[in-house]
Length: 420
Image (cartoon, rainbow, N blue to C red; front, top):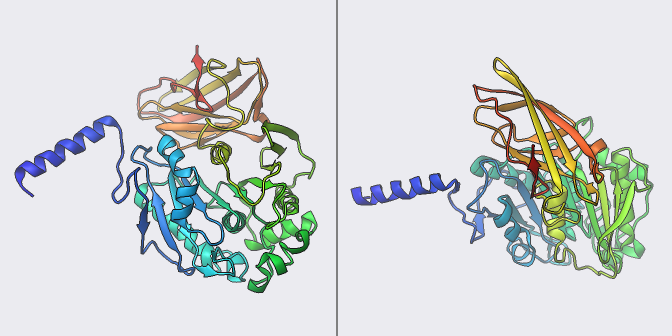
């Protein structure tokens, strides 16, 4: 390269850095890029990745999986995840299944290998894709999520069961419970014990045991689960939504009786089971999900965004007070979040920026990620709902290198809060 060319490249790089935009090699917000050689790939899968130009240093990762007969590029084109990635700065992995199952290529949720952690087949390939994105693009290991439609919804439940230490939450559209299919011969819906004849019926304990046996001895936190199904779905029977609910509520030790029900949008009937499981019955919908707005609701559930979901606060309806107590190289910051609106906030995430040199070491009444820079605090189970004119108190302990100012500014579910 000539000296003039080198100078020009240096100038461009400097301008990009000043603008605060991080660029990763090999992908742009305008294109879907295929990745080969991403790691262990026993499922012989193809991988495409969508990496927006503007994103944080440690972006969230969403694995978005197609239905039978589809492909990663096809799901990229037909769903809203990549356009939302441009707005909110997360990376999307689009795997392409390669296993023929009578309906074109489907994700393997039937083989013995696919039902055991580290057993092989498609689940291992998908984890390799996640690891690749973490290493290549700095993906945040504390914000990895799975979603998918039909076969991809089935694989979403699969990944949450097999790799609860990798995935923090999932949104399964038109899926089936983990370990629903006995083998490959049981997969076609017409002759399947799982999906044929109205769907398989087991007890919550049986479904929960299947998940627990997938990773014996695991005692860590389980990923939160969002489930979607159309009431007029006959290909993957609507009755299987109840079986999924029974499976995951049993895993969490919850009752099958919802803690709350509502209709966030016309035709969307939602049941919540604590803050761990939520299920959407879409009135009159067939085997056609996700439809408009559902990807945004999934991202809201994941905590990636606070906008586009069913219950975001309105502008001017939140207030935050922050107080710092500092000593030597440490500090605590107490934060009070107040709902100043007229409707309850049901599920929240509070985003803020820490001053340079501050690093969170522990916190209370919320989960915090990452530990420095642009941080998001997400509600705990006991304080997910903030009633009108009510407040919740959270806080954290941090180290500092001299700057003990409080965090700022604060946005609750994407809405800027007043401070003072």
